[in-house]
Image (cartoon, rainbow, N blue to C red; front, side, top):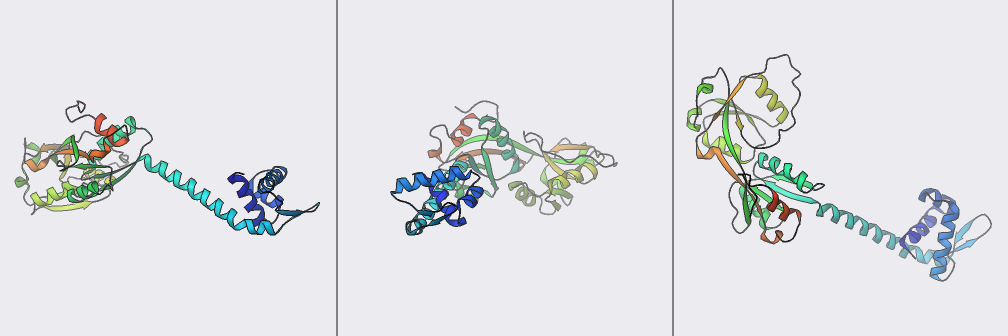
Length: 296
């Protein structure tokens, strides 16, 4: 007896006939009839009273139905649980404090471990550490080493002021946050901890926050507003086409000298996840260090 025979029996009971059950199960009526007879033989007795044109369940069939339905339900849950486990085994849960290092890591993820799915969340440093300790993320991207965890440098990112060429800032070789005073900036809102840096270091500046990245990029291409840029070594993100007749604004990126404008991001994982060849251990081992070398 196999679970498919049990499922077919339940379907015959549900539909009331072999022909209707065969149609529902997408098999031929003779094949279904043979399967039901094999099930009856394995159970040691008939389940249906048969005439030349129909079958009717007997008392044994009615008694068997409840157990059969439970077996089918358990088999379905088993398949679903195994499938979900397979998906989970191919999914990495990554928490990050900024978007660029996640983009950078993803470029390696798709080549080193193809087929791995990525679940990602942006969160602050304290939340990152808590989630890593409680094992609700597999990897954390933080801008500091996480105590008690396996950590290695991932990438560096440096911040620039993005100024139109005609702006006085564009003639500067470098600047500090203090130079930016009461200026107004277009600020992309999905930048994680960098937004806190901007607001903390420039408390008197005005920020026009734009959460839609494509709209933000369009504004930076077509307006003369000040903004920010970085040198994050990531593959260019998709951009909307320049479907406007407006001339593209030429910009100069002026480096900021403050220590707060420079970040080293670390890839952190629980030490017990570094054993074997799982995706966490593989990425910790295979993704290059910021200088292009491989971790030892």
